[in-house]
Length: 312
Image 1 (cartoon, one colour):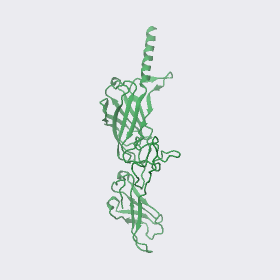
Image 2 (cartoon, rainbow, N blue to C red):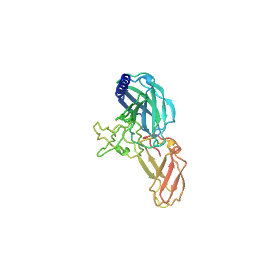
Image 3 (cartoon, helix red, strand yellow):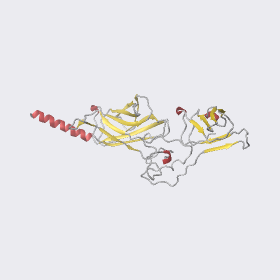
Image 4 (tube, one colour):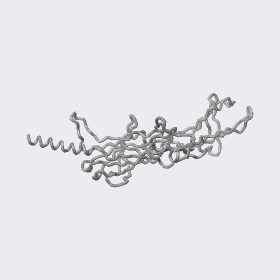
């Protein structure tokens, strides 16, 4: 009977220790690139309120990396601050809802309340998105259970960077993460896996966004950067239309981008492939698909474009 009580007290003691472990003192994430399909370095900062022992083989899982692109399996990570982390991590693909996660192992003991950093590279999603609710989980150690037998794990939301990636502004009209009377998005462009929406404009880098904890700027002044002109105003004459545009993000061929121009009504040209020419002709397909009924032409992009660069 005495041995049973001693064992029970020992288990309770272990559970109390684990309860102290079940808190990530710091968990923070940010990215360095907001452009569709570009490489993006995710930097993670973590610390716990208790020492983690490598003999317990603890792992840290970064969860809900929504729509990030990476091949499944092991890949290299950059250990920014120490050798506590392994040099490789495991990328796990979730085909159901694309909430992928990455698992990294601790190779050496940590110090309580000390921040540790590691980074890894993914490719951004092919479409605009707000920053997902990224979470951190600590596992691979003693799991505490409630009286009902349910496991209690360290699984909590991560803090996000509210700032901006250099030269990447974030007004509400390019981000759905806005509420009420906010003129500016509530999170900065450095929030993990925030991907910018494409627009035909140049904008003013550095002036468009202020995180919610700073004063909103009155310097917002974006300019639409699409222009159209023609070669003839004579009825029934052949007419060369010239279009010039800028975009706020690069158009990458991996996304198979197309430019669609509409509104050219009451023309005499029937449905056909129209020749595309001009100083930037190599960027576009040789012809565009013209629809007379719709007054529309669709032109494929054949080369990667640059943001804030005029194309004609």
